[in-house]
Length: 246
Image (cartoon, rainbow, N blue to C red; front, side, top):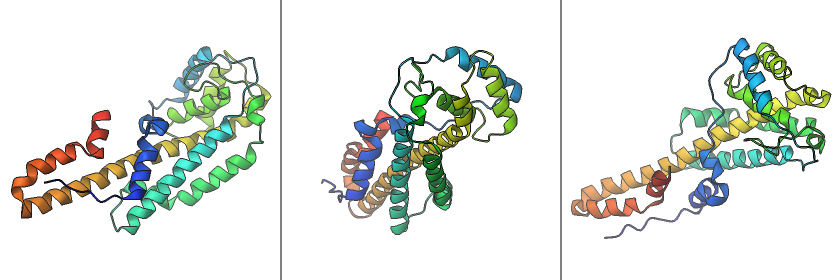
């Protein structure tokens, strides 16, 4: 006996998008969620980050707007997948509901970010030479650090503490100080994209799990002796392969 799984072009395209080699980083990029720091700890962390930063002396292409566009593409793909899930009358997780309920605000913030950052402006900012944000503006990495250690809840006190600590080692340019609010918005959007990516992958795996559970119930009721064959078929399926790679 061989289970002939119906081909769902939409699900196949979504799985290819989120788990293929070309977009593989989406799978492994966790949300920015590190230890929460007090204001005093934020200041000390700012000093440490400044000591690690090394900037390039040559002009680099604008990568900030491209990153925003990439993040927007992923967010739209997740919206499409969740809309399809609802259309099929399948339940979605609370995180997915929050994402859909607040999608208009997310899109609004993307448009504001694109509008407020002049094209090519990031090329005028000091660019990092190494580290996880290599090739991106130094101030963008600062925004990521602040987001990561505040669980996305930014207030003037922790922001000021980090910047003050940072500038005991490296003085930021006037252009960087002006760009901090914009970069914080960019960083939050990226964090939402990372969360959305996890929602998408979890949804894809759940779709496979639902499919195989339905198959096992059907086989148990009609051909119980074929359960072992069905298990072998599942072991060769996408969901099993994804689990082995995780």
